[in-house]
Amino acid sequence: MSDIQTILDKAVSGDRISLQEGISLMHSHDLDAIGRAANSVTQRMHPESYRTYNIDRNINYSNICTAVCDFCAFYRSPGSAEGWVLEREELLAKVEEMVQLGGDQILLQGGLHHEYKLDWYEQLLRDIHQRCPSINIHGFSPPELHHFTKLNNLSLTEVLTRLRAAGLGSIPGGGAEILVDRVRDEMTRGKVNSDDWLDVMRQWHKMDGISTATMMYGHVETLEERVVHMDRVRQLQDETNGFTAFISWTFQPDNTPLAHISPVGAFEYLRVQAISRLFLDNIPNIQSSWVTQGRKIGQLAMLYGANDMGSLMIEENVVSEAGTVHYLTLDQIREAIEELGFEPRQRNVRYELFDDEYEQTAVAANRAWLDQRSQSEKAVYQLN
Image 1: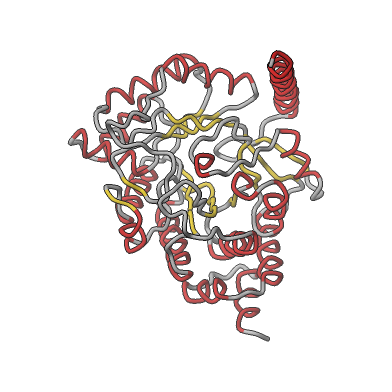
Image 2 (image 1 turned 180 degrees about the horizontal axis):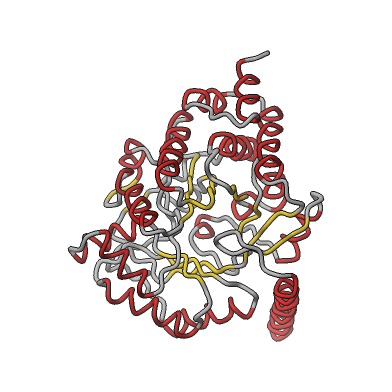
């Protein structure tokens, strides 16, 4: 029996694999064996007859950012003529439309704005909840929250407490990239380091808050550093148990200062996806990243460790700035799950399921919305 198969058998049986064993898997090219093992672990952790997805909207309130990230095509420096802050009424209209389409959550993120103090963000949260009181605001990544402490000269605890009181529901895992400072120092300036990213999550979890963890790879990191990243996430989860899911995706180099780096392909994506399921034995859910991979590979990821298709993403602005243009309708997401022999079920941020009536109402609303958009586009084409 090969050393790799011994490691895979260990993970399938429910025993924790070590950092070095994870690195060995990351160097292996036996994608079939790694994928089959990851699927076995998924079946053990999720024996249900269904697989999940959610409906939310990524709303970026601003693209102005004091950090300089070589991998980001979205941000603009303070003073740039291309910088913007979303008008409040436009933002609230986006939230309302998401609710009408059956969504229960917004992903609210922006750059590290150089002027806005904490009370601006508190009022933003209150305005959203006043307009749509039932939704969850999955907002402000650790770099933003760490930035708030510096700009306002406040402790992290006070920042988190005040934002939670204003309506913050959960924290996204954005800005993690690779949690190794060598990597971060090479491609970003003016942004939170690895320890501080983890500490934002630690303090939020200690307040009984939940969050997701992410990893963006395929740039300047080594294979070993990918596993170190997973190990740091796993260690914090052992400590706090506050991560509900892990989401990884490949770096999209177009339109960035790192455009000379060749993008990694589907083989690499599926390998990392599967290893994350094998290594992160204490994180219950793994999401597919169809937004960067497209429908077919996003669907295949469900056989390589993922149990969740992620979000419908009514809107996405950051990854798309780097040239990624994969879009799926709600029907396509549900069909992708059904084609694998599972029942598609809509869930919330805590992976609690909505009832059938809610789901079917959302499906009907999305079909009507797409039909309306199609008719509008056809009318514009005819006018031109």
